[in-house]
Length: 255
Image 1 (cartoon, rainbow, N blue to C red):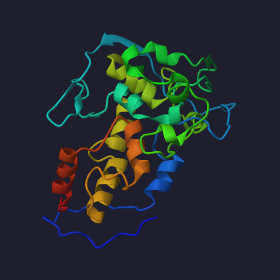
Image 2: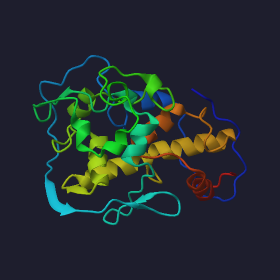
Image 3: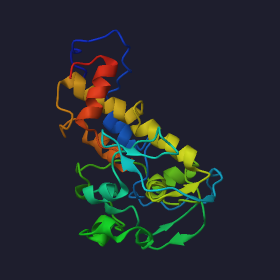
Image 4: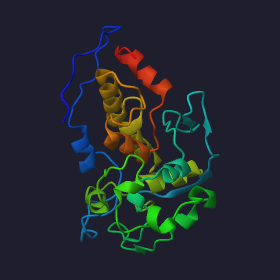
């Protein structure tokens, strides 16, 4: 784990959030992250924690538009502002190529074939090797943008009670459907999960910005925690210069 360097000069007396330096270890362990495959060979648990109730609502919402900072704006959840579309997450290289693999859900009790991706627009998968980058049963770090492994497995998410039967694959499946306009009674919980990771005060976004500032690096330097960067990507977020500068201004870092 990296050691903290001398703090940069400050512009204000605002208290900065506490920085922890074992972020890569935490991210790889899957703490507060979305699923990657059961690469350790675990199967669905015999019993799982009761999932929160959820049902699909009849209303539909339009596909979000971007604001001046490139964030996606959902009118009914204005605080939720990812800046990567589901298509971008998939095209960039995510989840070790495994997200829509075949699974046996411990929540629904059903087996899902490796064709769940066909529910979504074909252009999301244009040019991708589906077997290698979407439905692989083997997690491959080289598929990922930052060539790292991160996230917990499906067993962990199910046994924690965080998987809703509406979206048995997890948060990213929910996000794909939410982006396209579907709404469920589980949306508030899922939006909250996203915000705790990649929102303006989300743990991984805060941690990445602090590390960049304290090490005096550029906002897009891939050597600064590729694991956190990959994690944020899985949650629909990529750090941009305007958003990084906002963070520095808020917490008194010299950009």
